[in-house]
Image (cartoon, rainbow, N blue to C red; front, side, top):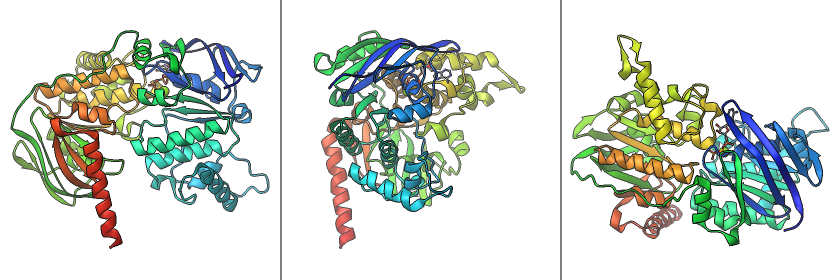
Length: 503
Ligand SMILES: Nc1ncnc2c1ncn2[C@@H]1O[C@H](COP(=O)(O)OP(=O)(O)OP(=O)(O)O)[C@@H](O)[C@H]1O
Ligand SMILES: [Mg+2]
């Protein structure tokens, strides 16, 4: 670690009703990995957007290698050697890997795209990173993890001094996170300075040299990782002591709320499962194991080829989400940007959209009731926004995710599928979500939980099913489920299927 590469002095950015960054003072040392932590809406993304040029600060200075700037344009940001991998993916899905990596690169010789050069360049970068992705593959055909790697490759194809990663692991599984970490270490060895943003405390403590805590737009403290603890960081973030435990779940019933038999389609083969009334059932598996696909068929979002569904013992046919909802099934999707919310509508509208029928009386909407419902969730989930009238597009990433949760939780479904509910959610709000889920189960609702966060899955589930390659490998009761058991089941199944394939 060396001299100061970048200093922010008194950086302030206001939005109507919020001060997103308030008089920020921060030094980033050359060669360090500096992590920013803070609750959803604390101002992390806004801060780094000042470095990319997509946010112009209202006040303050950015000092880069001794040069002072009041703001940075996107062009200057690139010239200085700043590369940013955003929280929300910014790849063009219909283009190839190579085209995405080369996007924005100047092509001086001709006005026509030079695919051969793009591919060679992309191959070179991917090779240096030690990853095996075909530069000609279309981005829409890649897994989330691979897309993330392409984002980083895109950033690395330019010569960078500072790499900013805004929650890069939110949608990755453990194996993929390891790959990302080794990439980050390679960058660091190559002398690149890194600003890292994450809500996952174990990661923060693994990669960081120093940690800066933000709260309500202000810097609370910068600490060396060797001189602090997880508990201290969390307390600084939320401004109070917080116990990281899972709430008590007491409801017991033997009645089956939902049963799925022999579900085939959407990549799944003969999948069977049931959820009892008041039970929280987890689905464990790696990315691409078919968990989301199975859930979407149960909800009616994707068609099943064959199989049977029973709700409280009664056979039902669900061919659309509307039918799913009418059978009182709710789904909280993993992909908030594409399926979860209407970005250009208010929090209130998003939260209460599915309630409009219930609260309309002689086509007169009970505006009061809608507002009350929206406000209830705004408070319960601690959504950081000036009011329920705020547009969802203007919320921070984690707060948008909370609106997705509120929307489905407000529908009063009996059976609720949570697909990666806490992705990108801060530690404090995670606890609130666990409590809300437990309250739902304790009141007799049934929950299907899909999560790549092992601690969450093991901590919340009464029972869980393990999936790989679209098949259910088995089920584990709460008291017998461990991470090692789950991983062993999965790797045994994968080895067996590879062996079959070779034979
Ligand atoms: N374009 C905008 N218009 C209005 N308000 C905004 C805009 N962008 C951000 N904000 C507000 O600024 C605050 C800080 O948001 P920011 O995205 O920086 O939070 P964050 O720390 O990155 O949170 P998360 O962990 O959820 O990603 C939030 O209250 C957010 O609603
Ligand atoms: Mg953010």
